Picture 1 (cartoon, rainbow, N blue to C red):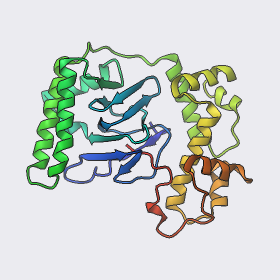
Picture 2: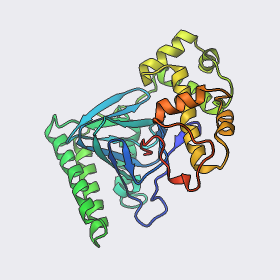
Picture 3: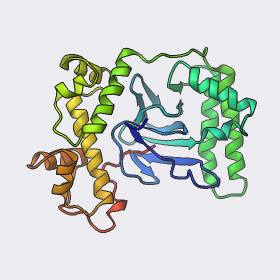
Length: 300
C-alpha cells in the first residue's frame, strides 16, 4: 500500500516487538507526530477503551467503542482511531507472529485464513455475547499487565494472554467469508492514492474525481459516505499533517514548507494551521522541534 501512510511499530527492531500506546484525551504515549489522516501497518492492533468513547474508522465501516470494550483491527487495513474529549484507551500492537508460535505452524495457517477471509476489517467486542465479554476480559488483563512491565515474566505473560485471546476469537468468530471490495471502496482507494501522489500540486475537485473516473458529485458522495468529510477538506487535512511532519524533521522556514506542501502563499495556511492546532505556526522550526506534537493524535 505505497499510497497511504505506513505507520511503523516503534518497537519493531527490539527483541520483543510489542507496543502499547496509552492515549489519554487524544495525547499518546509514546509521543508521535500526529496523523489525522488514515494510515495502515503490518501488525495486529487491539484497542481497548478505559474511559469515554472511541471511534474506529476504516474506508468502509465505523465502530464506536465505550469503556470496557475493544476491537481487533486487521493488518494492512487503512484506518484511524479518534478518541472523544477526555477519553482514555490503550492500543496493544503486535506482529502476527506473536499468535502463530513458529513459521509453518498449524496456527500460522489458521490465523492467515482468518485474517484474509473474515467479513469485516474491524472485529468489535461489544460485550453483547459471552465470548466478546471474555475477550474484553483478556484485553483488560493486558492493560493490568502494564503495571508489571519490566518484570522478568512480563513478556511471557503478554504472549500467553495474546494466545488465549486469539483462541477465543477463533472459537467464536462469525462465519468466514471472502470479501470483495465494494465499488465505493475501490473508488476511494483510487482517489486517496491520487491525493497522496499529487497533494503538492494545485488540485481541483474535478481532478480528484477523474482519478476514479467519476463525476464531481459522485466523488463528494463517496468521501462523505466513507470519511464523513468533503474531498477538499480531506486534502486540506492531509496537507496539514504533512506540514506537521516537516516541522519536526526539517529546519526550513514555514513559508517554504507551506509552498512545498501545496498551500501556496497568503494567510490561508496560517488560518488553517491555527484552526487545526490552536496555535500559530512558528516562522522557523525551533531546535529540538522533533519532539513537538502539534496535533496530539495517535500514530498507530
